[in-house]
Image (cartoon, rainbow over all chains, first blue to last red; front, top):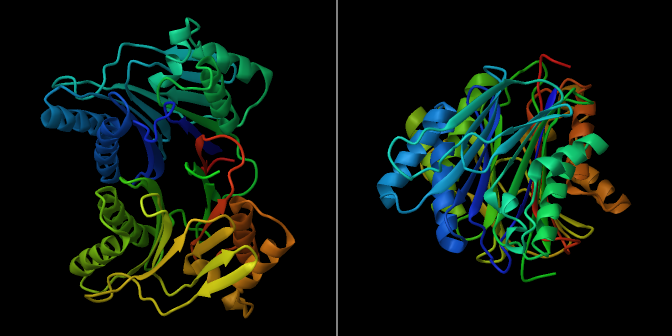
Length: 237
Length: 237
């Protein structure tokens, strides 16, 4: 088998800094975790908050702390620092080679999609962001690693796209249509979701948007680990 | 402009754990850093060392510490912990959007290649690994971000490939032939270098091998940040 992960990310229109932060960390007992946080408001302040949350979570995961405990710790740290006045969403998607499961941790009102082949399950249980109070509980889902599994996680910029224009985005419908029509690579699925949202916002995203897609497939080919990053640099063409 | 980064990584033959660790971190003043460490020996012990070095460097970079200072701090921490008995190489490749430069930090006897269009420059100045003594100096190269720039960084598994069989790899020759023949994506260049090395080792890599390619190009297309990861899972096909 192999796990493929793709991320597509844009800033709010005319904003040079994204309030969304996403990082990846190797798990000390095997596998990796993707950590995505969306800090309240946008621009530099939001960036500082989401960076702080992601740093905290990644540092703990790297020490072998379990995902749920890392989320609670980040929430307590944010609450202590900002006294409940600033909040941040958090999603962790972990490929845990020790338990041989995918562990999904969510502190985010925005739902996420868990798909097995063509069947789509929207996980929309109530989930509150970090830093809002003491004792914030993460919502945790654990799934066996199996081919055909696709997970779609996003920040609320995606669900809010088009709302201003009374034409909100139905994320699971777009996921369904893409999965039915073709066998998309994770990057293709992430790109199509992001494109759809940006189009609904008439090419001026009303918020930072991040889309993360994780897919498990039967292994095709070699045993090489690969990673690619594309970083557009503004101010130049 | 856009910066494209690609990594290809394999374990030593029949080893389930790589002693090489690579992680990416966002820089607090804009841009990102790729941090690659190769811990002494192989397997679990080497992994613990390279993970510790990468964690230390990434934590400091995330706080805004400069690359050279982060490398020195990681060296001192490793020396203090292991009394000079365990060493680790370190490479940092940073896209610093504050200074608008690429900053390359090297504590690694293995050289690296800096190419501008077809011209290849091998940086092979003597450079010692972290943790060997107090006062380890990193070798730092700072370059303006400009289209046509290609940087190739690797762990010594690449340069040692084929040595056992008296047929060592000439990295810069392979880079030259690939750059001359085509306009490769960073992933293609990283994959070709890795494939070449694995072939020289008769498909049984004698060491962990990691190849990192960073390329600056004129921007083609949108302003979306993208990231993809492929993680093969052993024990399943």
